[in-house]
Length: 175
Image (cartoon, rainbow, N blue to C red; front, side):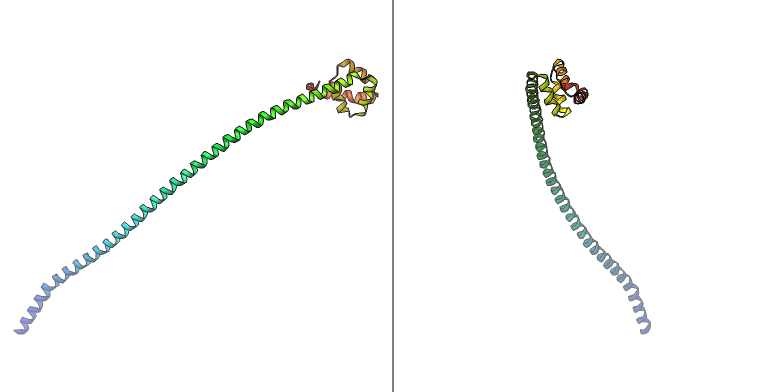
């Protein structure tokens, strides 16, 4: 009977002890899993905070870069306006210099023309014969046609025809 009683007791202990152990094991598994999830949640929270800090730092850096670029754009615009102002000034000076140069050329041409007008046709012909046909034709273009005819008549015919040909090819603006 002791044996039966011992077996019954052992059987009851096993029957009642097994569910308590299983319950304890399930609770332990859930607690372990809960702890793992809490650790994972903390890690995710830390990563989120790091990401937020990185995002803020990036935005601050972007704002600084934009401000720097804006400042440089302003400087570039200022330099560009200075360059345009200088360009206008240079164009104005260039135009003035062209006018002065034209006046000097005209005065020089008038002076040379006056000198040749005062010369006798034979002397003028000899001087012009010694010059290049281009230079001689430019001088003759400033004189009136009657004087040009007299000078060409006193020149060597070959040189006179060469000068006449150059005069014919000169643009109308020098005539």
